[in-house]
Image (cartoon, rainbow, N blue to C red; front, side, top):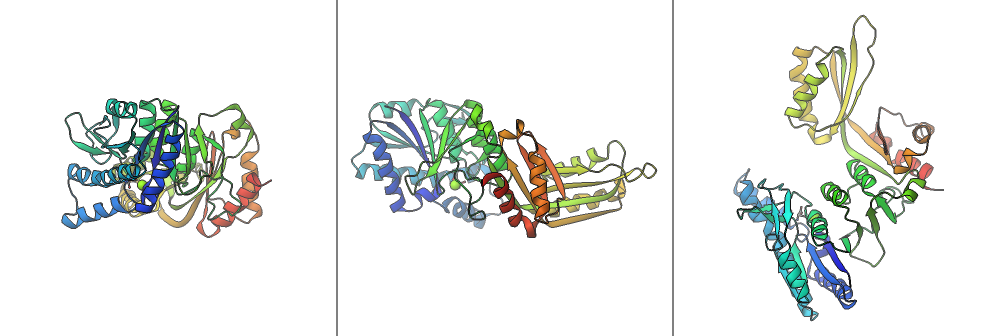
Amino acid sequence: MALIVQKFGGTSVANPERIKNVASRVQEYRSRGDQVVVVVSAMSGVTDNLLKLAREIMPIPSDRELDMLLATGEQTTIALTAMALHTLGLGAVSLTGAQAGIVTDGVHTKAKIRNITPRQVHDLLDAGNVVIVAGFQGQTTDGHITTLGRGGSDLTAIAMASALHADLCQIYTDVDGVYTADPRIVANARKLDEISYDEMLELAGSGAKVMQSRSVEFAKKFGVIFEVRSSLNNNPGTLVKEETQSMEDVVIRGVSLDKNQAKVTLVAVPDKPGVAARIFKALADAAVNVDMIVQNVSHDSDSRATDLSFTMDKPDLPKATRVIDSLKPEIGFASAISDEDIAKLSIVGVGMRSHSGVAAKMFETLSSNDVNIEMISTSEIKISVVISLGKCETAMKAVHSAFLET
Ligand code: ASP
Ligand code: MG
């Protein structure tokens, strides 16, 4: 007998039919004798609608009241899921985050889990029930309802699996698992059997969004192995776990593309101490989340000026330009050029650590496809390049084919 945590996202509980489908899947595991804890999201679209409702009352509602409101989305699904299990003759009890013992800090709308005391969950499981826990929510020590940030049901599931010492944690979603590339762009993309936490995090940070990154970080920290799989079929999914020796045999695990990027280049910035600090402090103060930064060497030793480029998410570009314009008198660069027609293409794999020539192969592939590289950045297990938006899908297919289609 195993203890299994199964998380179902918004699309998996989108309507009564899907909820009944979830119930049948839970029944399969129950009939094998497993204990099952189910974590559910709000039905798809519900959280967005609640947010919209709130904004129709006032533009910037209180975060505490938003949490009170948003938590109802998940509360609807837990009750409906329990009912669906009852129709199958199974014992099932729904619990709010608070009832499941999830204690958070008091930062409303993006609370962090402090601890979990799942006493009621254990008692109900021991009495033969399926326990259905509302995702995305918790409670402060003084009893205020909180939520964990958008996509937070993933975190609820991972944290519950950790607190319950579950044997297995399954994240059910509307895709079959983690792919070598977005199958909507790369027809030859393959589903991965396994991936390491770090690779999953790097892919997510590079535009491939399967799960909330915070949940993957949490899973890594507490060693929770989980499987990402589809609730719409019975295909095995992708196992996400600590890196193993054999994972290094594969040079590249996946390719990702982020089209939501913009770039600013400051031309002829004075090359002296404190300038970069001043620029990036001002951007940080304006909550612009800077990603890549490239500074060239000085043009010539007399003028002591350099070009400085950085990238950010596209929606942050107006804020960034405002900041840069306001700094111009003080810093005295020649001009600022912004560019929205860029994309970030990344290759990720722990095998990069032990294989050489990976960057060269990527750059050669790009050049033979006539794709110019505007910026490069690397981590131990990732190489990212900024290229033109117009060529990014061609580039992605070419790079995928070079590394992952043999
Ligand atoms: N319902 C919440 C959201 O839409 C939490 C989740 O789905 O994980 O963000
Ligand atoms: Mg969701």
